[in-house]
Length: 302
Image 1 (spheres, rainbow, N blue to C red):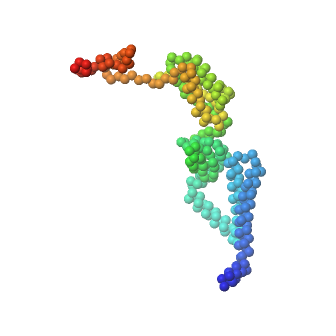
Image 2 (cartoon, rainbow, N blue to C red):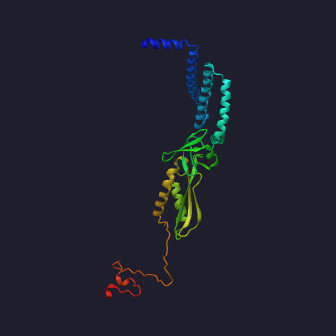
Image 3 (tube, rainbow, N blue to C red):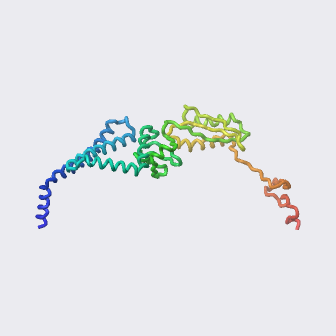
């Protein structure tokens, strides 16, 4: 009984005048979805190496939504929907949304400026304020970053336009600067030679541009230099760790002192320095060698 009711219902639906229109509308939407995907991938493959990952992503999305929109409009026409009325309603809705979402509109315009200026692309390492990470997506409203500790950060495009952006991978080479201080008694020419040898022997240091040892000034406890070496951008983190270790090892081998600050304590005009005398046989000072404060008595006098 139920089977007969189901068959009669299906037959009445198929005989309905709009059944064919609904069927073709569904077919067109499905075809638009599939063709949009294929067109996006096809355009990316056609452009090949002429587009970077950022442009490929935008081309893929633009082709998909454009083709899907055209097939959806055709499907609505198949259902008898008057597209002129729909377009008028869409225009009114667009104006209303424009007033209600000024921030989103600003982000979209900023995204277009970012796309035209191209200060960075997908895969670059950028620093925005206190955030540093890899660009994983550049969308119409925001830029997505993945930090080095694997956190997801979303930054609005308007903020990216206004902020100072540092692209750490824009150029193929980078310079690492190490601040080095040596004691005043050291031979400065010898210090330069040791630092130059460290740069020449390090496998990640480039010969061109040449490494530099720059005099920075006379410090409170040391003579200060800046030791600068160039390396490939992808090797920057390695050389940033290895060069200081190599400098410390080279200074130790050549007995070059890296000084540290010294302080003299002063407690008043009537205070005299406290002498410390060490016995030749026993480095521990005797009680009688330690000066007593006025009015006190040592244990040996009692």
